[in-house]
Image (tube, rainbow, N blue to C red; front, top):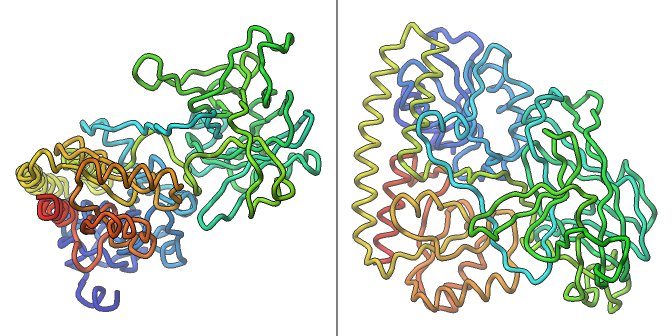
Length: 513
């Protein structure tokens, strides 16, 4: 970083795409707009559009992961002095970074979430579809809506609390993270304490969860939702409802549950609906060939935990009971902490989406600095012309790969836009998110995919190299190459967005052809 910083003068930071962290100024002598961007990619696009009239600082440094990066005091200082802030959002960035940005940015500054705003400039988004094959229901937690009626924004915390419980045994709701670490959300073995039995999520978010029940029978769990619009402010009640679980029994043989919809498979969430001010179930209905979120009142459904969920308590899960005893376990399917939204946030892997980002950035600069309207228009037009040429170059480069060999396997699920726009289908990935861990089933499935499709190479993001042992082992076992691909961070090799897209296209063509 010292060498990189030494190479970056104030001028080149503005016009060359270099994303070292300059110190922004409260009163710059040259009058340039002071700009912060959450990621390297966004910082570069902003620098290209702003030219010599902006100074840009990327909060996430080169080589770091936006999904997990937490801000420093230097970042806070830059945020405070910024005239303009750009984030990607749709839950790309670590939530602590977004909360730090929104709580420290000046009220007079422009604070723009590009992924949402770029849709007005013809950006195309891809819904996140979680297609995990399980033989039991996959039950998570969800917050539906933004909470504006409660005075909430994207930095606000949404609390889901367990306030009541009944059943023949105990219930645990927990998250299994990397290296087997467990975060407990709900634990009835010592009774119910709403101050401890709770989960906290951002607005419009979903998270995975495992659920364990110690004995067969009928359980009821009452969940209450509340919103804390400001970190030091009071909570505002959203709603409360009682959810019914039938464990190891047939709901049709329980008269009081007659007529209720049985949810025994697929994906469902215990949901706080901020728009309806209610707790409910959101179920992913795939019966029509597409995924449709159905909103089901808690009193109209039964969450069925079938006998397929029965298993012995494994080692390392002593909180569920003595090793060797049994438990009914609904697995979270994707190991690791993965809080996400409804939209795939990696829009920039489509160059046409990056053009939409550039147009939104241009108009933001003009609104804050109308005296340089013509310069921003000219810089944006020249940059968009280069991006149009880049889009054509990437398309032609990837088209050189024989169609039978166009299969993309990566460390995590970040390249759906690349796949869609440039005709290189995603054959598989190790995990959906860098912070999650693959299961044995995941690895068996991915290994079989690589062998069946005769995939000649898998692709690793340089900033994830220290966490990519699984992908290297797969390559070693199958005798194929490991090649580089860039997602959302720069380094000494890739220092601009154009360089990122060009590098990826050439790496894919070289390794798959």
